[in-house]
Image (cartoon, rainbow, N blue to C red; front, side, top):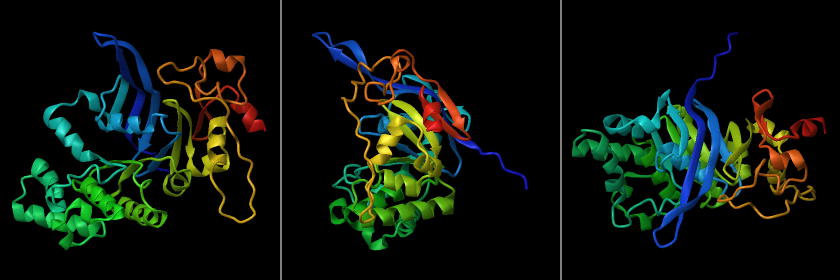
Length: 331
């Protein structure tokens, strides 16, 4: 049986995003916050890839940079081999149909004075030539697709629950039949039972339309259930990438091990050794030399302080940036 080669839909090549720090009377640039540092990644068609890490590690900034909501400082983002940053005018407008985002706070992303039906219709006003009646029918279809009703068309955002508002956000994201959807903490603000319903909806939509998800989250349990592959970020850098199964069963980077040890075990009586990291998270405006994790790493040696580790494939499709990863594999 012939094995089909994976098709890269979205490619990140050395992506960097720096925010200027301005000060003084003339507000001159005095430094930069290095939110995303040299991220390279292939996102394959039809997959769900998770991006995890502590708050402030750069995962949300990376998502916004991919989508063009933040200007890229250096590197390239390619969609179907076309560099996103080089597109303009009609080509950029076409790209916005292909890539959409589901935000963490659905209420903040909706106009409180605008009816939901009108908010969803705006998408078709901007990108299609549909008549008013056709747009309205499209919105009815979208509402039904995400588990809402036609009668919700004339309601305002405050009349919905958090889960219903997130369904509206999903409806807006899928309105133009995109290929890639970036989910930025899309279920973190929801109750656990509602999270499960929304995740099931996202899975069903993926199967129906062949969607590709970039799933940004700090909830490692949700990522394990939802994602095919997982990227671990620390201080703007990618430190590990593997399939969900391999990452959770055999984490190789010491930071990944510490993250996974924090997942609570629901089984009564189960014990788990928690890896507690010491030291403060470095300032992204003044990151440490060498490995960005060496100031908190229990395995750090002199080489970690001096040289940044190479991004290497240690096992098949399992990538790690660590000087001592072979030691971890042996152990």
